[in-house]
Image: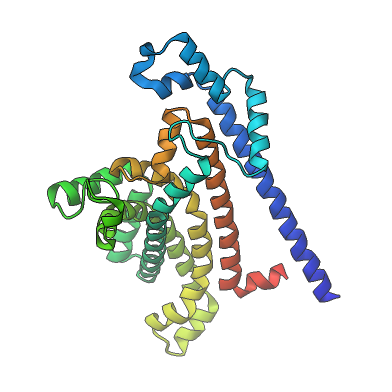
Length: 333
């Protein structure tokens, strides 16, 4: 009976999460479409740009008919939603390709950037948080805390511009833009060139993402160091390095993991600004292009993709917290 009830509980939890995911995707799609439909920007003028005067009324009508702009907004949303159910996200108005292909290409370019920034922010934030908590009130703790609070309030684009000026313009250690050397064919780009162009955008995202992990880990470290079992270990002669490695790190890892997986959404949002600063051809740059050019199918497809990624990140964070903290598994059981 215990195993059967546990299986039923897991199925119920999975069903609730599936319902939440569907509700989230519907709400995101409806909200984004309503914002785009109510935008004062004319989609045809945004697509044509400076050549608006060069097209006549007949050409304009053809463009509107091709994009479905001559239909009421609710009808357009219904047609689009019907295609989405079958797996068709439509065709990008700017790139002239299926939305799924554009998102797949751009997400593949952003994946290495996001993965590297995610790992750097998590590892550095957790390590520095342990050091700050272990040296409470000392110079290192004050410096790290001040640095974390400063970066937490710093915009991503400002950090990117600052790093770009220091490392690319002044020191000339890193490239100014792009994901590969200019004029180089995709097949001729080496792995070293890709990494060289990837370092500064990833550093920008990771520097901003370190702050919350560092501050939460520092607080968790202070709470564990003040606990009774740590006081008992101190009384037995265990030193601070052993306490941090064997007792503090495991207990502080749970909140840090949850926060790190939950920060996927912040990384995706920050990548929009970082990719604009460094002209990095990823999903963030495609999001900006779709918004400025009123590419509704592409923007809706990106919104659904990012919502799905954030939902999965939060679910993985909950799972990682249960694995890291045994008490959570016991309560859930």
